[in-house]
Length: 79
Image (cartoon, rainbow, N blue to C red; front, side, top):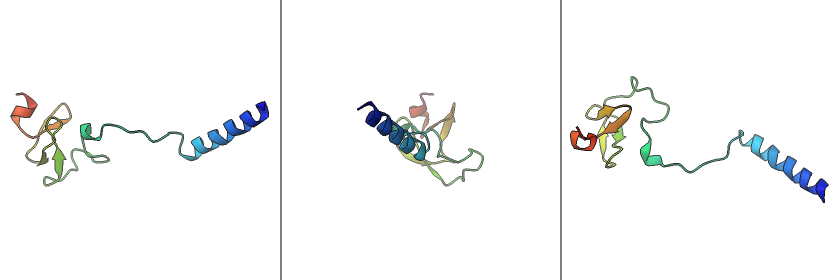
């Protein structure tokens, strides 16, 4: 009985390592601050980004960025 448990644990550990050592997780996608993999300096001006407050999409050129978070207007940024 114990031997079966050890074998299943080793198989589970093997699958865990095969998946890269981390399991997929469900995160709040809406609160992404910047588009993944993009450096703020390399984002083109016409790239659409989402406001963290209301979810409206605006161009990066028209957005307001405060502490790394993107807002669509002064009202959403509470300025």
